[in-house]
Image 1 (tube, rainbow, N blue to C red):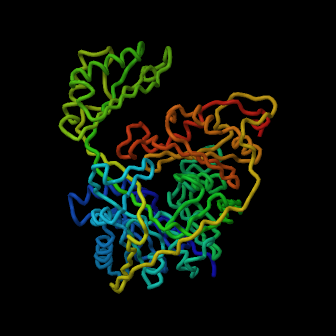
Image 2: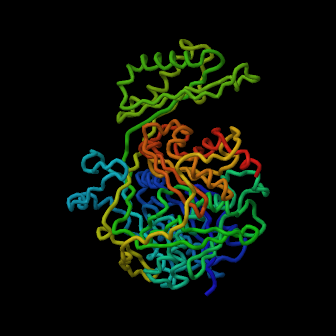
Image 3: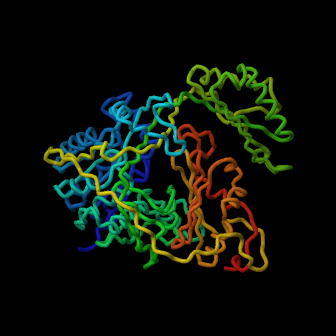
Length: 587
C-alpha cells in the first residue's frame, strides 16, 4: 500500500487559523491532524471550564473545521485532533451541531479515559503515590489539590475509530505523536507488536507535531532558509515499514532539510529512548536523508515495547503572582537597582511578607550609548503568595510610589497591574491497568481500547562514538561563538529545559561530542549551577541533547525567568564563545 500522507495544521492552541484550509487546499493529503495541547494548555482549558462547564476544548478547532469539513468529506480526508482537551465529548457534540448547520453528515468519534481527576482519591487509596518524576515527592505529601490530571493515551483508540469509518476523530490527552501513529496504524493495518513501524510513526509524529518548526520555522541557521515567506506546515508520508518522508506543499515558504528535521527531532525530548504508550522509539537509531528539495527521509527507527506505566500531567494552583518591570537608565545602574529593591520592599513590609519573591536585574545597557534606549536596563520584580490581595494592586501601586521618591530616571514598562492565578505542573506515572482508554464510535457504541503489551527494551545496535573524554587537540584555534558551527533547538519539559545541539558534518560532530561535556555546558550556562544536567548522545543525528533539571522551576505557568519556556536558551548558548579549531571554521 502507498504511504499515507498525514498533514499537520496546528502546533499549539493559538496557531495559524488559516493552516487547516491551506493544508486541505494546497495539495493531496489523506489525514489532517492538529495538535492543540500542552501542559500549560490543560490549565488554560480548566480555567475556561470554570466559567462555562460546557467548555474545556480548543474552540479555534471548530472555526478551522468549518472551513474545511465539506471538502474533507468530498475528498475522503480524515480529520484527527486532540482539540478535545478536557471535554472531547463536548467537542464531538459541537462538531455535530456545526455539521448540521452546514448541511453535512460526518461520522464523528471521540477518545477519552485520560481524565483521572475524579479518581485521584481512589488512586491514592489504592497505593498509587503519583510521585513527582523529578523531585520524588508523593502527591499526598505535597498538600495540594490538583485541578487537572490527565494520563497520556496512545494511538490505538484513534486507529479503531478510523477503522469503524469515522471521518472526524477528536481526543482528550493523547500523546502528540499518537495523532500520526493512530492513522498510520489504521492505514497500514499494523499489529500491536510491529515495534519498528510504530516507532517510525512516533518519530514522524514528533517531527510534524509543532507545525512549521519542521519547515524552517525557528531554525538556527537562518542563511539556509532562502524562502523567507511564512513557512508551510509539514506533511509526513508514512510508509508501511514506518519510514517516512517529511515534506510540505509545493509553493509554500520555508525549508525542509536534514537540519530542520534534526532540530525538530531534538525538540523537547529527554533521553533518546522516547517513551510513548504504544512503543518506545529510540531516536538514537533515526537516520535522515535528503531525498530532494523539501523532502527528507526518516528511516531506521527502532522500537521496543512500552513500559507498564503511563505518564500523567497534573496541574494545581500555586497561588497568585504579579510582576512589575522598572527601567533604569545611564550611570550607577547596580546601585540604583539595589536602592529601588530595598525601598520597594520596605514600603511592602519586607520580603518575608510574601511567600516568594524574585528580583532580576536585566542588563541591556552599553557605555556611552548612542541612543537613550541603549543606556537602559530592567529591574524585574515578581512576587507570589496564596493571598491575592498581597500581590495585587497593593504591590504594583507600591512600585509607583518610587516615581517621585526613588532613583533618578524612574519609569516602568507597563502601568500598575492586577494579580493573576498561576498553576504548578506535576508530572507523575500511573500503572496502565488503572487507566481505561475508551473510544466512542460514530454509531454511539463505546469500547475499551486494550493497552499494548509491555516488555523488555531492545538494545540499540552498536556504533562507534567519537571520543568524549575532553577537547580534541586539533591544531590552531580561534575563539568564536558556538553557533558559528553548531545548531540548537530548545524548549520546556515541565520544570526542565532541554537543549538539542547538532553539527552539520562528521568532523564538527566529533569535536562537539568531545568538547561539550557537562562541565563545559555548565561553563556556558551559569544558570545551571547547582542543577542536575543530563547529557545524551545521538550520533546518527550528529547531535547531543542536554536536559537541565529544574531550570524552569515548577513549570511554565509558575516560572519567573523572562523566557519561561526556554525557547531562547539554545540561541543564547550559540552566542557563547569558546576555542574552536580553525580547520572547522574554514568549512
